[in-house]
Amino acid sequence: MMRRVYYRFPTRFDLNFSLMVPFPRAIGAIAALHRTHTNRREGGDLFKHHLILEIADDRTRFLPVDLLPGLANEVTESADFRFSVHETLLRPEGRVPVSENTFLVRVVDRGPQSEVFVVKEGTGGSLDALDVRDRLKGACE
Image (cartoon, rainbow, N blue to C red; front, top):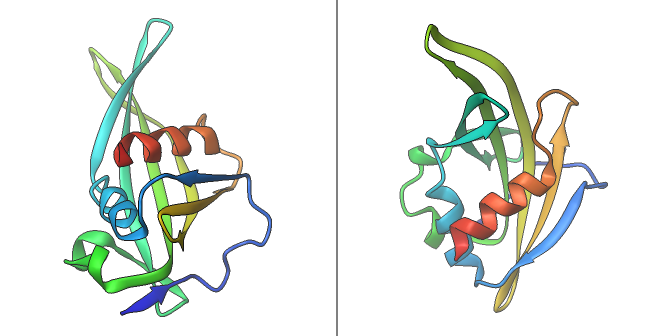
């Protein structure tokens, strides 16, 4: 059992909130989001958001969560994730890549609940930390 933290995780964050579930359940629900997608309509356009989820490994890099089975039982105290959300515009003539949104997410064990810190890497893309919060809260319900 161990913490999975990234040593370059920023000390300033965009959003801090709590998930009202214990740490192992929160980690399991977050890991289940790997390689999922959602669709969103904006005006007359339809966008697909494809989520790639990685977890910190050896404090210096990230690995896809599907390489670590039993993740929820292995990690204790704290876990850092990198969320990459690929945004694609869906049109009748084909798909058009729009942007990639990347977020660092730290989940910390606080007993009966889990505290979450979200930081957006870069300025590109249309998503923000509130979108990540909504996705995580939805996964943990």
